[in-house]
Amino acid sequence: MRLSVDNDFQHRELSLTKALRQVQQLKSKLAELEQQHLCYVHSQQELIPAITEICVSSAQEIEALRILIYKGEAECRRYLRSLLVNQKRVS
Image 1 (cartoon, rainbow, N blue to C red):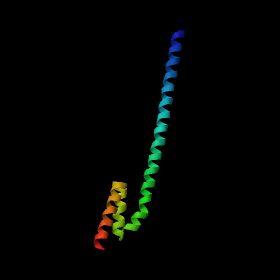
Image 2 (cartoon, rainbow, N blue to C red):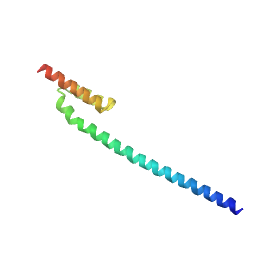
Image 3 (tube, helix red, strand yellow):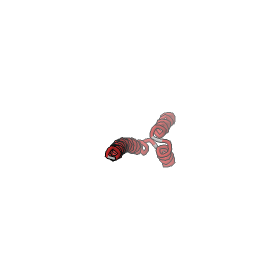
Image 4 (cartoon, rainbow, N blue to C red):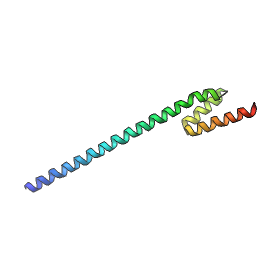
C-alpha cells in the first residue's frame, strides 16, 4: 500500500512540475510576443510623420494609412517610395 501511495505522490509531483514548466514557457512566449508587438507598433508609428510629409493630398494619406493597417509597414514604405518617385518625375 505504501508503494502505491508513493507512486501516486510522485506522479502528481511530476505532473505539477511539468505543468509549472509549461506555465513558465507560456509566460516567456507571452513576454516575447508582447515585445514583438511593441516593436511592431513603434515601427508603424514611425511611419505616420513620413506619411504626412510625403503625401500631398488627403486621398494619398488615407491610402497610405489603409495600406499600413491592412498590408503592413513594408508595403506602406513601398507605396511612399512610389509617391516620391512620381513627385520627382513631375518636378
